[in-house]
Figure 1 (cartoon, rainbow, N blue to C red):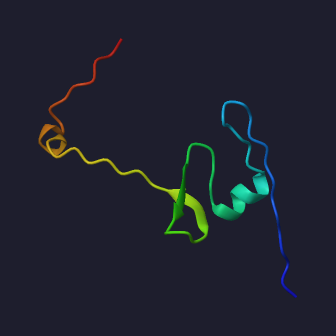
Figure 2 (spheres, helix red, strand yellow):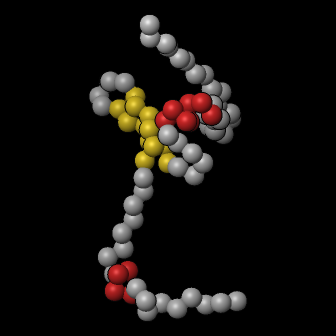
Figure 3 (cartoon, rainbow, N blue to C red):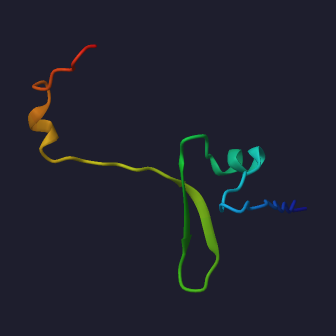
Length: 71
């Protein structure tokens, strides 16, 4: 028999919400992660974890040439 689960969350006046720990674990999302919501046309809304990758083309050329300043 399939077990169905439903989660409800309250959204505060600033649009913030708290996602239940159990749901975060099921989605594989932890503090600091980026959540993504995706929908095609009028279909269901999918929720998951996203990764942000930033590449700076000239950064490789500067590698090793930048010295960190110590206080």
